[in-house]
Length: 398
Ligand SMILES: *[C@@H]1O[C@H](CO)[C@@H](O)[C@H](O)[C@H]1NC(C)=O
Ligand SMILES: *[C@@H]1O[C@H](CO)[C@@H](O)[C@H](O)[C@H]1NC(C)=O
Ligand SMILES: *[C@@H]1O[C@H](CO)[C@@H](O)[C@H](O)[C@H]1NC(C)=O
Ligand SMILES: *[C@@H]1O[C@H](CO)[C@@H](O)[C@H](O)[C@H]1NC(C)=O
Ligand SMILES: *[C@@H]1O[C@H](CO)[C@@H](O)[C@H](O)[C@H]1NC(C)=O
Ligand SMILES: *[C@@H]1O[C@H](CO)[C@@H](O)[C@H](O)[C@H]1NC(C)=O
Ligand SMILES: *[C@@H]1O[C@H](CO)[C@@H](O)[C@H](O)[C@H]1NC(C)=O
Ligand SMILES: *[C@@H]1O[C@H](CO)[C@@H](O)[C@H](O)[C@H]1NC(C)=O
Ligand SMILES: *[C@@H]1O[C@H](CO)[C@@H](O)[C@H](O)[C@H]1NC(C)=O
Ligand SMILES: *[C@@H]1O[C@H](CO)[C@@H](O)[C@H](O)[C@H]1NC(C)=O
Image (cartoon, rainbow, N blue to C red):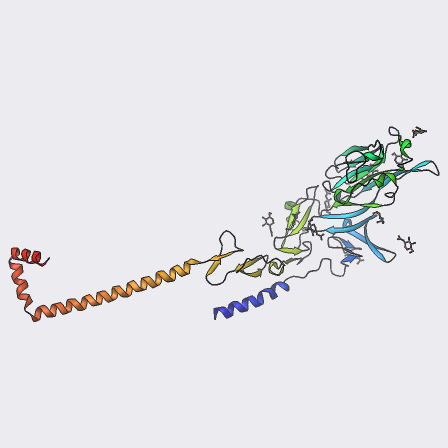
């Protein structure tokens, strides 16, 4: 009977979690993607699809391929759990045109408030032979002037993949930077002598992991019209989690979500609670992860996996139990066996005891009868009246 009930429970378990919450990532009626890029809320395409105007994107279609744009910045992907987005940005260059004998350059200025440039993943990189570029970082409170010098004695001294001052130089950016301007210095570094083999110099903000210096960048102008990726941190709200939780505009709408303060400035991002995944910014957006359905079964044999809301349970077969230190493991359970054995032994003893008591009663009854029958009482009376002989009697008996 119990087994049947258990079976039934196991059957309805997965069914319940599947229907629990919907898996939409955008507001109803809003598109979930633009081209290849998923657009999860709080971002959205067009008015009324995003959490605020700051998160409004436009989807532009050029030559049948669509790309989302945040202002003039092309967006490559959006990561909800990290609170980051990757954008495609042009490189600033300074090139010597051998026909016109003039230096052409493109200055670069970009601001992203209320968001900011990620200071851990992005680097300011300068490429060129004898190039000095200045950069102005601005965050909400301050403005910092920085620069990077890239020298190169000869082409032979350049190394692919190495950005340590020869042909390529890089420097970190301050936390909270949301406005960057950079330009080349022409006065101190006159690199007309290297134009013959190095026509261009470049300056860029770039995601470090996605960029590898190539000596070809020095000898050709291939980088001139290329874009690189830049990681932008975005946050919702302009307060801390604690202040936001009590306000009406708290953005972590899912019941199974949590708030974490941004480490790059004011504001916060939302995260699905442990055991859930999806979009924490939407009501019903975080859905339970079916741990048992993932390729790696979390329960080690012979345990059986059962998915629960926000977690899972490993059940052990009869004669096994969950290991206290590691609930994903089952260990042999001696307790019931020992109990059963102890029970059997106890029963044996009990039976034996009862048997002996009954037996003894019978014996004493028989004794009494026997003594009565053979006039034993008279003998006993006599023994009692004569203590010495009683002693002798009992001694002799021993
Ligand atoms: C967006 O919402 C506002 C107010 O709710 C409404 O007035 C406006 O018409 C909506 N715009 C669109 C394009 O739906
Ligand atoms: C669009 O396609 C045309 C013709 O194929 C091409 O000349 C043009 O450069 C393309 N535009 C972009 C932005 O790729
Ligand atoms: C380069 O980046 C700019 C600004 O984000 C964008 O407008 C342009 O389409 C990008 N170009 C390419 C080839 O990705
Ligand atoms: C977001 O970043 C995390 C950590 O790098 C990664 O595991 C996850 O797959 C990313 N999500 C998306 C949608 O790219
Ligand atoms: C959000 O949750 C994921 C998965 O639990 C975790 O990897 C990530 O670090 C969390 N992000 C923040 C900002 O707490
Ligand atoms: C770039 O900035 C420098 C210094 O501010 C200026 O001399 C130069 O004319 C600017 N170039 C362009 C194309 O705006
Ligand atoms: C960014 O910096 C530039 C130059 O320093 C300035 O002209 C511009 O107004 C700034 N933009 C914002 C949004 O602060
Ligand atoms: C750089 O040096 C060359 C010759 O060495 C000179 O003709 C040129 O005017 C200089 N350019 C600048 C901007 O000083
Ligand atoms: C924070 O955001 C709210 C609502 O968007 C706005 O009214 C307020 O002025 C902002 N505060 C700051 C300090 O930016
Ligand atoms: C949110 O996170 C805090 C601190 O990490 C934790 O105490 C709280 O239980 C979490 N709430 C939910 C709903 O996960």
